[in-house]
Amino acid sequence: MKKLSIPAAVKLSSFYSNPLNFIKKMDQLGPGGFVLFNRLFQPDINTCKQEQSFPFRLSSPGYHRLPLRFTGLLYGNIETDICSSSGVFEGEGIIKLLLAGANCVQCVSTLYKNGIGHIATILDDIKKWMKDKGHKRIDDFRGRLSLKNQKNPFAYQGAQYVDLLMKGKPVLKDYNR
Image (cartoon, rainbow, N blue to C red; front, side):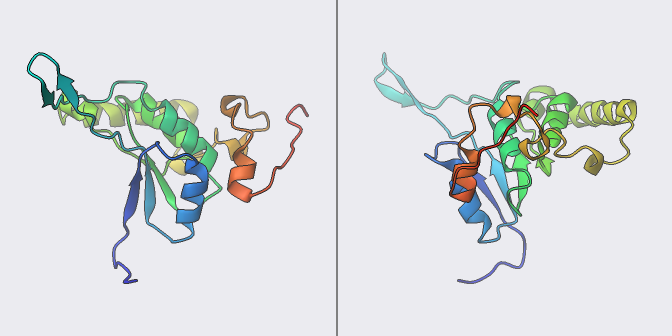
């Protein structure tokens, strides 16, 4: 297999039966990053005209919750960078994904809806939050709220199978200490 001379990211959909295991195995191949998650184009059918239609539907605020969960689960368990996307409209959404462990965040729909100048507002929101919290660099807080850095993984509850999927064997932990 020929190697690329530039980093290449793998943009994934969330429609795998075992995305954590799939990402863990792909991580061993050394991609430049994983983008969580690509929203697939979904056509529709106009029943009156009996033809396909192709609605252009952008993401909405809050769609970032699934990538947020998987970012928090993957942080510290893979070597490859994590790029989170979907439904990121304001600086707060980016901060949440960085706290979960994202290396970068994609914001697309908000730029379609609010214009390219909205980037300045997003950056101002992030700078203000960082100043208010006493952070000088993103690395000061990246991954702070990932599963790896939680004593009680309440936010990741229902994900107790993660150790089995990532490591191939169940690991029992006492989270009540």
